[in-house]
Length: 609
Image (cartoon, rainbow, N blue to C red):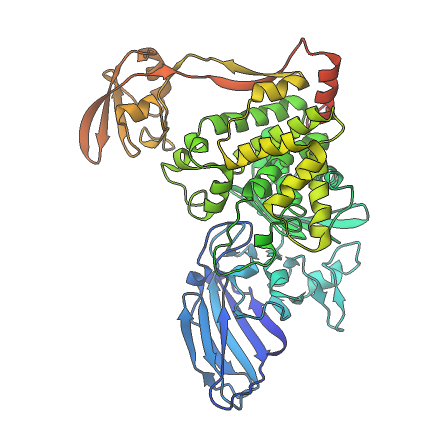
């Protein structure tokens, strides 16, 4: 194949909820018979570890001789592949298809009267075996809509410019253009650059000479806090500080999608997509969570988009890419997201400790940590974490929350072992220098070597135990040198070990090794009564506390698959709500360690409009 791929992606008919796509490329054939070219569509998007089967959204794929307009044979050769037979006289091929775009998520495509959003993994058919061929993507958009994408643009006078900002001076010209052409040097570059087109508001700020853009789409009549650029700037500086202060990119975009509900993000090398409730920015809690999400995805610009395992050094976009290191990729990032907000002065120590306590509570309430290690749970992400069922918490670990707990424990151990001279930041900088900066991915042994260089063999042994075995760290012992202690409030209350579907008394999960499991209660059972008293979602807690006594059997009336049954459950003593509190008797050394770990820069909450 000669020359770059040339795509035309048409978003000018939002009422159809379809993106119209055309692809043209030159071809050079050596076989005078019937040579062919095979195209494929990715089945997943890096950062979201589930095969999504994007090809299910494709319309009919047609192939033509671009010069004559004559049809070329085009046959589906796999669920996501198409083989085009090329006549000897054909020098240029045109492929036409549509993509159904009606799913608003950070991974997919959505086209409405107000915006167009897509990941290129969902829309670009690509020649099999040619990841290094370049591409130009002409985007056709309604008049007045602005295109946000981290890829550079090709201008009408054939110059290639970075994405348009006030800093580049190119924003006004490109904003008014109906057609814009994006340039990707490789398949990886194209896949790593989602697009958001619409009339949402733009904010800009500069950190260390690097321009950053924030696109706010879907807020309706609401507005973002006036401090958002300043707050994101502080997060960027805090993240850069972990890796020595330098930013790894030349520019960065926060693509923010707001809707009625939802929460999530997806990382890219020079941008991220954030999905949040449009009302989230109007409350202190919602705004803190949004900033934490932004910090998480930004941190991935270092941790996974650059510093990454060997298994992810070259992505296979058609099949699962397995690794046992998602506890580092996602877990360590989940640890740093709230820590970065603290370092940036956007939250205070008490708020941070509340988040850490929730992570610990989540870890302790999921028996899967005794059954599958963090490494094994990472490997199984494709079939477990992204496909949860009623038994997921009993059979595996969430490498986000549990990985964050393991990262916190390692950070505490490193700080205590070195009397505060070193921490997890130093491990990441060491690993980054030894692997990504040297042009390669890392293996598990590289991680352990970086930990050993900072904290010695004892820290390595603990990390191996926490990630390759049972995750059951002695948190009281780890927190004590920092003048902190675990406190259980309301311990001893009757505990059953089940959870309900939202707004129902239908059992969603039954925790292993609890009274609910021992009684025979199963997911899907609808609890009708306790001790002869009718229950409903609003009164469940009140009835339970009224009739339940630790160690005393209770009759449970339930409906199971259309049959009413009666069981007996004997409540155990619950551990209560977990908090992390300052030890009032902590000495000066402990307070010094704690203050170095948890700096308290914030004295007042963020100001919301």
